Length: 206
Image 1 (tube, rainbow, N blue to C red):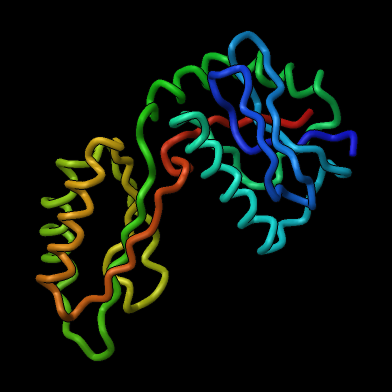
Image 2: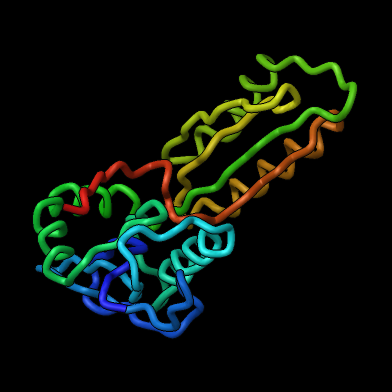
């Protein structure tokens, strides 16, 4: 188990806890370089297979990091980032340091929340009106928003929001109002997640 599987990057030195991690690992810890830390577990491959179970573990570990020590900002990595050695990983931290620092300050104290609105079977729905109305309600509360694909005919609205922890209650209330006002829609409200949709730090594994 000499390789390092990376969940995300934090500004603290030491995030460490026992948990069910990717590929059967039982401990998560930090490899640091100049005040940046990659949160990792040990793995026996550099090309892990993305099973449903491991993808879920990846997300759950990220949630645990977010809750760690009263709240820790983490720049999440996509599933599957694994490095052959601590040295290779520290080289990546060194190379992408400005980008990580910027990303950490952009998302500090904020979480990602998802909202999908699905039309009830047979309902006649005015997409544009709903988009405008829901956007008007939610956009002022959120720090940022990203539109996602409408991958089915009944999916009317699909967005990710970056919301400050302090604004979570107001955001939740507004979602509840949308649900109350629209019997013709099913509301699928998910999160909190680490802010995947709002960071774009690409790191290579060379």
